[in-house]
Every structure is written in structure tokens, then in C-alpha cells.
Length: 228
Image 1 (cartoon, rainbow, N blue to C red):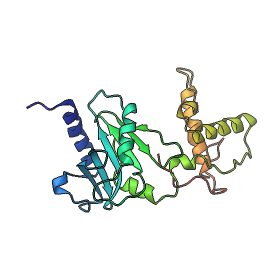
Image 2 (cartoon, helix red, strand yellow; image 1 turned 60 degrees about the vertical axis):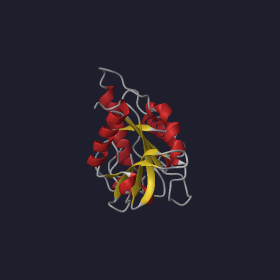
Image 3 (tube, rainbow, N blue to C red; image 1 turned 180 degrees about the vertical axis):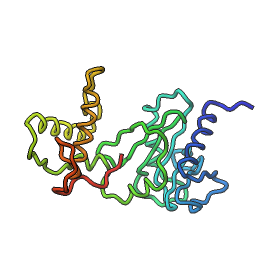
Image 4 (cartoon, rainbow, N blue to C red; image 1 turned 60 degrees about the horizontal axis):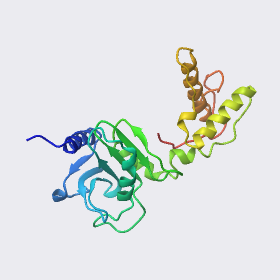
């Protein structure tokens, strides 16, 4: 018997979840405490069953909305967001679930609902259970941290470098990834741009000089505890 396109997608998603360390369950075998991370298929909510509900340390942290291959995932975000803010069966009312995914098994989008302006981004696969567990312990998400850079130490920097770094940080804070680096094919700018961003981040952590790239002792506390 041939599978429907969505059933095929779910089969692939099952494999992806297992490879990422999640224990898969159906409602009839419900046991959120069976492992650190448990993904439960067709979990009931007051907005209808979510394709997968993700539990970490027995607590619901996110959902996955499965779609057939070829589906444009951006419009699906509203549906998964609705499930994330719904009341889950047997769970006390509380804050909306923090993490939600949309996936076809080929393409997967992820949203951290604690971001200042939540917006999906494409990921290679599902995060391991340890990752949302660690993120839940942090006071702020990546995009919150990227709005809170400490003052830039401009010692040894030229005016054009200060401008470039300042504009990069503005783009980070406004969640405008396409504005971060302007790349030109065949001119060598791609390598230079990537190197600049890498050294900027290292400099912000006090590990390298932003110009020479050499290691140096930390000058101050930079951005820490951030996640991709």
C-alpha cells in the first residue's frame, strides 16, 4: 500500500527525530518521562491534534507541524504558532510553547517564540533535546543578546572598520541577516566578508584582535550564552 505524500514526510521526520536523540511515542503509549526528549505524535490540543508535541524533562516545550514535500512552509507558521499557544491535553494552563517547527522532511523551519520579533529560520534538522533544555535555562535568546552588545572598544580600529562593525551590529539587532554581508562573485569579497564577521564575533568575545585576528586576553565581558 502506497503512502500519501504527508505520510511519507512523517516517516522521514520520524527518522530525523530519532537521529537527533528523541524517543518517539504514540498517544496510546504516552510516557513523557521515558527519556530526556520525547516526541509524541498526534498530541491533542484545544485547536486540534498537533502532529508532534515535544517534551523535555517531562515538560512540553514545542511542536512540529508536518507537511508533504514541496509545501511552502512560510504560510504554515501561523498554524504551528496556533498550536504552540493552545492548551495541551492534561497540561496546566501556562505560557505558550517556546519552540515550533514546520517540516516536510526535506526542508525544516524553526522559530524561537521568545525572540523579540519571532521569525522562522531554516535549520538542517531538529535540535537534540539537550539544546532546548539548555536554552530554557538561559535568560535571553540569541536575538535578544544581539540587541545588547556592549560598547565597542575602538582602539586600533580605523574609521571604516568602526562603521562596518557598527552597521553589522545594527543588522544583527534588527534581525536582518541579508543585510549583514554583501557578497560579490569572483572578486574575493566573499572570503573577506566571512572573515570579517568571524573576527568580529571573536573580538566581541575578547578572544582575538578585530584587525590582526591574533589571540588576546579578554578585555571585558562580551556576548555569552547565545545560541544559533
